[in-house]
Image (cartoon, rainbow, N blue to C red; front, top):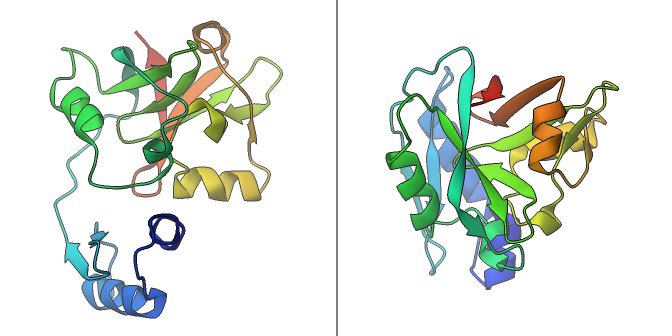
Amino acid sequence: MARSAAAFGIPFDPAQARHVLAEAAGDRPRRCRLALDAGGQLELTAPPLGSSPAEWRLGIAETRLDAADVWLQHKTTRRILYDAARANLPGGMDELLFLNQRGEVCEGTITNLFVTRADGQVVTPPLTCGLLPGILRQVMLERGECREAVLGLQDLQAARAIRMGNSLRGLIPARLI
Protein backbone atom coordinates (compact mmCIF):
# COMPACT_ATOMS: atom_id res chain seq x y z
CA MET A 1 0.00 0.00 0.00
CA ALA A 2 2.85 2.37 0.86
CA ARG A 3 4.54 1.73 -2.50
CA SER A 4 1.37 2.39 -4.48
CA ALA A 5 0.45 5.45 -2.40
CA ALA A 6 3.89 6.91 -3.07
CA ALA A 7 3.63 6.12 -6.79
CA PHE A 8 0.31 7.96 -7.07
CA GLY A 9 1.12 10.81 -4.67
CA ILE A 10 -1.46 9.77 -2.07
CA PRO A 11 -0.81 10.51 1.61
CA PHE A 12 -0.38 7.33 3.65
CA ASP A 13 0.32 6.74 7.35
CA PRO A 14 1.66 3.19 7.83
CA ALA A 15 1.28 3.37 11.62
CA GLN A 16 -2.41 4.23 11.27
CA ALA A 17 -2.87 1.36 8.79
CA ARG A 18 -1.26 -1.12 11.20
CA HIS A 19 -3.47 0.16 14.02
CA VAL A 20 -6.68 -0.20 11.97
CA LEU A 21 -5.73 -3.75 10.94
CA ALA A 22 -4.74 -4.77 14.47
CA GLU A 23 -8.06 -3.54 15.88
CA ALA A 24 -10.03 -5.41 13.22
CA ALA A 25 -8.16 -8.69 13.52
CA GLY A 26 -8.32 -8.99 17.27
CA ASP A 27 -6.92 -12.30 18.46
CA ARG A 28 -7.89 -14.51 15.51
CA PRO A 29 -7.08 -14.76 11.80
CA ARG A 30 -9.51 -12.82 9.67
CA ARG A 31 -9.92 -11.66 6.08
CA CYS A 32 -9.60 -7.88 5.97
CA ARG A 33 -9.54 -5.47 3.04
CA LEU A 34 -7.92 -2.14 3.73
CA ALA A 35 -8.57 0.57 1.14
CA LEU A 36 -6.91 3.96 0.86
CA ASP A 37 -8.76 6.76 -0.93
CA ALA A 38 -7.17 9.60 -2.90
CA GLY A 39 -7.24 11.83 0.18
CA GLY A 40 -5.36 9.34 2.35
CA GLN A 41 -8.38 8.07 4.32
CA LEU A 42 -8.41 4.37 5.22
CA GLU A 43 -11.48 2.15 5.01
CA LEU A 44 -11.57 -1.39 6.34
CA THR A 45 -14.03 -4.09 5.31
CA ALA A 46 -14.09 -7.73 6.39
CA PRO A 47 -15.81 -9.76 3.66
CA PRO A 48 -16.29 -13.49 4.23
CA LEU A 49 -13.84 -15.93 2.64
CA GLY A 50 -15.59 -18.62 0.66
CA SER A 51 -14.44 -22.21 0.59
CA SER A 52 -11.97 -23.35 -2.01
CA PRO A 53 -11.33 -26.73 -3.66
CA ALA A 54 -8.10 -28.56 -2.81
CA GLU A 55 -6.94 -28.26 -6.43
CA TRP A 56 -7.91 -25.43 -8.75
CA ARG A 57 -8.81 -25.98 -12.40
CA LEU A 58 -7.27 -23.27 -14.57
CA GLY A 59 -8.41 -21.78 -17.83
CA ILE A 60 -6.91 -19.07 -20.02
CA ALA A 61 -8.64 -15.69 -20.14
CA GLU A 62 -9.57 -14.41 -23.60
CA THR A 63 -8.53 -10.84 -22.78
CA ARG A 64 -4.81 -10.05 -23.05
CA LEU A 65 -3.04 -7.71 -20.63
CA ASP A 66 -0.83 -4.83 -21.73
CA ALA A 67 2.49 -5.47 -19.98
CA ALA A 68 3.27 -1.73 -20.06
CA ASP A 69 0.10 -0.79 -18.12
CA VAL A 70 1.40 0.71 -14.87
CA TRP A 71 -1.93 -0.01 -13.14
CA LEU A 72 -1.24 -3.75 -13.27
CA GLN A 73 1.54 -3.38 -10.71
CA HIS A 74 -0.68 -1.70 -8.11
CA LYS A 75 -3.52 -3.24 -6.12
CA THR A 76 -6.31 -0.74 -6.67
CA THR A 77 -10.07 -0.77 -7.02
CA ARG A 78 -9.53 -0.42 -10.78
CA ARG A 79 -10.10 -4.14 -11.35
CA ILE A 80 -12.93 -4.32 -13.87
CA LEU A 81 -11.09 -6.79 -16.11
CA TYR A 82 -10.21 -9.11 -13.20
CA ASP A 83 -13.60 -8.85 -11.49
CA ALA A 84 -15.48 -9.54 -14.73
CA ALA A 85 -13.32 -12.58 -15.49
CA ARG A 86 -13.78 -13.89 -11.94
CA ALA A 87 -17.56 -13.32 -12.00
CA ASN A 88 -17.86 -15.15 -15.33
CA LEU A 89 -15.59 -18.14 -14.77
CA PRO A 90 -16.46 -20.85 -17.30
CA GLY A 91 -18.09 -23.94 -15.83
CA GLY A 92 -15.60 -26.25 -14.19
CA MET A 93 -12.97 -23.52 -13.72
CA ASP A 94 -11.71 -22.11 -10.42
CA GLU A 95 -9.34 -19.47 -11.82
CA LEU A 96 -8.38 -17.86 -15.12
CA LEU A 97 -4.82 -17.03 -16.13
CA PHE A 98 -4.13 -13.87 -18.06
CA LEU A 99 -1.55 -13.68 -20.84
CA ASN A 100 -0.06 -10.42 -22.05
CA GLN A 101 0.05 -9.14 -25.62
CA ARG A 102 3.29 -11.14 -26.20
CA GLY A 103 1.66 -14.42 -25.12
CA GLU A 104 3.54 -14.52 -21.80
CA VAL A 105 1.68 -15.89 -18.78
CA CYS A 106 1.04 -13.15 -16.18
CA GLU A 107 -1.29 -13.95 -13.26
CA GLY A 108 -4.73 -15.11 -12.23
CA THR A 109 -7.75 -12.99 -11.36
CA ILE A 110 -6.89 -13.07 -7.63
CA THR A 111 -3.60 -14.97 -7.54
CA ASN A 112 0.01 -15.04 -8.64
CA LEU A 113 1.37 -18.03 -10.55
CA PHE A 114 4.12 -20.41 -9.39
CA VAL A 115 5.38 -23.15 -11.71
CA THR A 116 7.63 -26.03 -10.71
CA ARG A 117 9.70 -26.95 -13.75
CA ALA A 118 10.86 -30.48 -14.59
CA ASP A 119 14.23 -29.71 -12.94
CA GLY A 120 12.48 -28.75 -9.67
CA GLN A 121 13.06 -25.00 -10.01
CA VAL A 122 10.03 -22.94 -8.90
CA VAL A 123 9.45 -19.86 -11.05
CA THR A 124 6.98 -16.98 -11.17
CA PRO A 125 6.55 -14.41 -13.96
CA PRO A 126 8.54 -11.16 -13.65
CA LEU A 127 6.71 -7.86 -13.15
CA THR A 128 7.75 -6.83 -16.67
CA CYS A 129 5.15 -9.28 -17.98
CA GLY A 130 2.40 -7.13 -16.43
CA LEU A 131 1.21 -8.38 -13.05
CA LEU A 132 0.63 -7.47 -9.44
CA PRO A 133 3.62 -7.89 -7.12
CA GLY A 134 1.63 -9.90 -4.59
CA ILE A 135 2.74 -10.21 -0.97
CA LEU A 136 3.11 -14.01 -1.05
CA ARG A 137 5.07 -13.74 -4.30
CA GLN A 138 7.42 -11.15 -2.81
CA VAL A 139 7.98 -13.21 0.34
CA MET A 140 8.78 -16.32 -1.70
CA LEU A 141 11.23 -14.37 -3.87
CA GLU A 142 12.94 -12.85 -0.82
CA ARG A 143 13.28 -16.27 0.83
CA GLY A 144 14.71 -17.80 -2.34
CA GLU A 145 11.74 -20.17 -2.67
CA CYS A 146 11.26 -19.15 -6.29
CA ARG A 147 12.84 -17.00 -8.96
CA GLU A 148 11.44 -14.95 -11.82
CA ALA A 149 11.19 -16.32 -15.35
CA VAL A 150 9.13 -15.46 -18.41
CA LEU A 151 6.62 -18.27 -18.96
CA GLY A 152 4.54 -19.32 -21.93
CA LEU A 153 1.71 -21.82 -22.24
CA GLN A 154 4.25 -24.51 -23.18
CA ASP A 155 5.87 -24.04 -19.76
CA LEU A 156 2.54 -24.71 -18.06
CA GLN A 157 2.00 -27.83 -20.14
CA ALA A 158 5.51 -29.13 -19.30
CA ALA A 159 5.36 -28.17 -15.60
CA ARG A 160 5.91 -30.72 -12.86
CA ALA A 161 3.47 -28.69 -10.75
CA ILE A 162 1.43 -25.50 -10.97
CA ARG A 163 0.34 -23.55 -7.92
CA MET A 164 -1.65 -20.37 -7.64
CA GLY A 165 -1.28 -18.24 -4.56
CA ASN A 166 -1.93 -15.10 -2.60
CA SER A 167 -1.31 -14.00 0.96
CA LEU A 168 -4.86 -14.87 2.05
CA ARG A 169 -5.21 -18.37 0.61
CA GLY A 170 -1.56 -19.44 0.49
CA LEU A 171 -0.42 -21.77 -2.29
CA ILE A 172 -3.10 -23.78 -4.06
CA PRO A 173 -2.25 -26.74 -6.30
CA ALA A 174 -3.69 -26.21 -9.78
CA ARG A 175 -3.90 -27.82 -13.19
CA LEU A 176 -4.49 -26.38 -16.63
CA ILE A 177 -7.75 -27.57 -18.21
